[in-house]
Structure formats: C-alpha cells, structure tokens
Length: 339
Image (cartoon, rainbow, N blue to C red; front, side):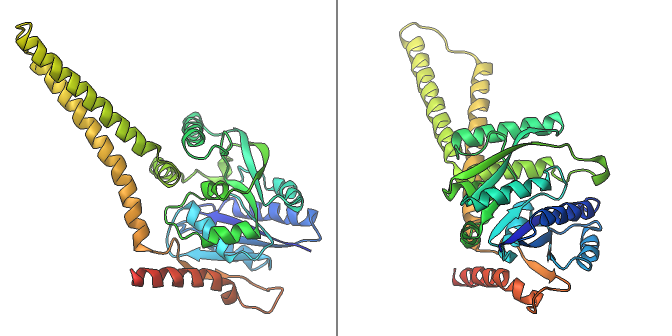
C-alpha cells in the first residue's frame, strides 16, 4: 500500500473547495489500496476560505489544513504543503478546478511505473485571450532561453516521488520557481497532455493579477537564465559601436568634407534612446542584485501559523506533522543569525 499526498494552495477559493474535496474523494475511491492525505494550504486568504477548510476538515480525517501567517504566493504555499507531506508520492494541483483532479488516477499509475516526475501539461486552455497570450509567450521564451524541457504551454499540475519532494524541500531558495526546479533536478518527466478548462463563474474570479504575473516572469528568468544579462551586454556593445561610428562620421564630415554638423533634434533623440537603454540595463542588473540580496538575508520562504487535522488515523498529533516545516524554518533562522 502506498501513501499519496495531494497539496492544494488556497487563496480566495472558498467557493470551489467543497467540490474539489469531492473530486479527491472520488480519486481515492478509484485507488482503494492506497492511503491518501489531502493537504490544503491557506495562503493568507481574506475571504471565507480558511473557515470553509476548517469545516471540511472536521468531517474528513484524511484532510490536513495549514494556515500561513500571510500571503506568500502560490509557489511558497505549495512548498509549505510539500514540507508537510508524508506520502510516497506527492501531487500538487490548483484549487480552482480548471485542472481535472480525475487525472490524478493516471498520474499515480505512471508513478508506479517508476516515473519519479509526472506532469500534466496543458495542450490547450480556455482562459481569456490576454491570459493565454501572456502565458504562451512566457513559456515560449522560457523554453528557448532557460529550460528546454518545459512543455510548450507549461504546467502547474504535477506528481513527484518522495525522493524528488525531499530534494525540493532541501533547496533553500527564495523567489523560487517551483516548476523550473522540478525540471532542473534532471529526472525525466512523464508528460500527460490535457485541455485546461475555463474557470467556472460560480468559483469567482482569479486573483492572478498582472503584477503577480510580471513578478513570476522575472523570478523565473532570473533563477534559470543568464539571457537578460547577455542581452544587456549586447545592447551596450551595439549602442557603443553606433556611437563610435557616428562620432567618426561627424569628425570626417567636418574636417574632410567641410560640412557643418548641425542637428540638435537628432542629437537629443540619440541621447534619449541611449539613456533609455542604460536605464533598461540597470533595471535588469538590479533584478539580479535584488534577488541576490534576498538570498543573503536567509528569511524563511513561508511561515506556517497553524496546522489542523481531525480524527487522525494514527495517534500522532498534528504538531508532529508540523515538525519538518518547523525544522526548515529553524535552520533558515540559524543561517540568518550566522550571516
């Protein structure tokens, strides 16, 4: 008998949680020989999500609810769930039911075939056009300049072996892009393609704002690619070369051809463009430097405020389940003091 952990980051998902739990129960019923645990991580929701989770946990002994002290983001919330997971295999899925939980049955079957990483890759998506355009552009660039094994339309839904989960938990990296880390580890992923549904109106609106998307984009490239820095260097070389050639032309035109070099407007245009490129390059360098500073601080990636689980199948307390996360936070705190 295997133990399967399913991790769900929750942020303003109160309306979909009951339906999601029913889907998990159906998956568990299709795998009667396995022991399941459902780990819901409330990522600082300001709606009724945590209250709903408490109510559901009271009637479901396989359900574990972790509450973070504030909103840390989807990736840290999943990592908090991974730190609490005790399964031989650990899956992670969004709470909005756009990804089909029923697919977990096939993912578990492929894991049994010795695939340590099983990912559900989007073949198509029912999201609005701007969302799809941004997402497809991001993954196209990420495949080209960072990790080539990234599926064409990316993934957020995955199942990993406990060995991979342990390795992920051991990576002490702030602003981590979890999907990139899973592929970076080098285990050959088994890919299952599916069509991602549009978000049902009854489940409310997505909290995935433009600002969060831009941070996600920056974190991903800074963590796994030197391409932005190389582009900065290339732009600097190109503009320096054009500036040198223009200077040579001005000198030649004045001394050899006797042409008066007027043109205040063209000079201002060149100065403004060059200044803009310089600011762009400084911004790119600043993104790398900021993340380097963030790493040296050694702050914990997440803070678990409490863990709730009722009617446990074993006599161990929920406090014991919290120990892996507490140990990780303590280690990060000690490192911060050492710095």
